[in-house]
Image (cartoon, rainbow, N blue to C red; front, side, top):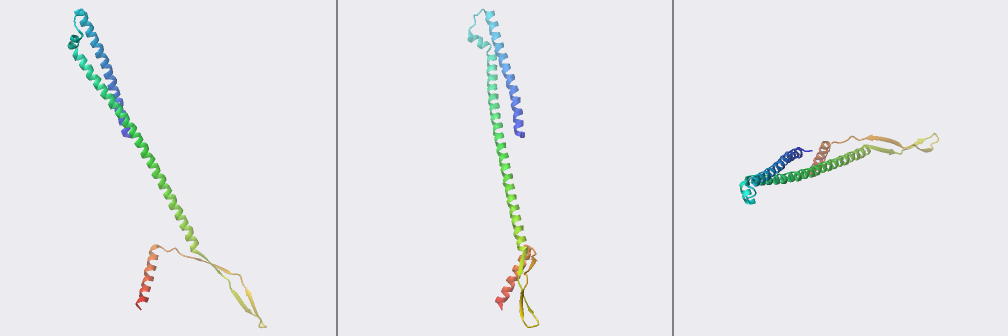
Length: 186
């Protein structure tokens, strides 16, 4: 879990505690308002109208409305933070998938390069070893001056070629160019 998600979840838990406290406070304020109205009705023997009671205890109602507005704002903030967490988790999963995809592509490239290197080595090894087959015929003179042609088995020689580096190839190429220029000048 990323740092952003953990901080956001911490903020959500704090806001949830605040919201619960506001809800309890709203319930207490409503109970207080109702008790004040009942007491006033009892002392005035019901002679006060509802509007007059509201004007006398309007501050309690106003506080309750303010707290309800704050509670609604906190609910919206919590919902927005939860959406932010979901977005962050999706982005994190997407980044993880992209990272895995890049790693797989890199591994595939490495395997491809390794296969090419292996193929080059095999080609180089097969080019470095040249099999020379030579069949020779020997002419043998016998006392009676008869010529006898005897065939011998072919002689197989192996010659190892030395790998040439790029620098050596460049040197050979420049020497060949110089020789060609000399021939052209003559």
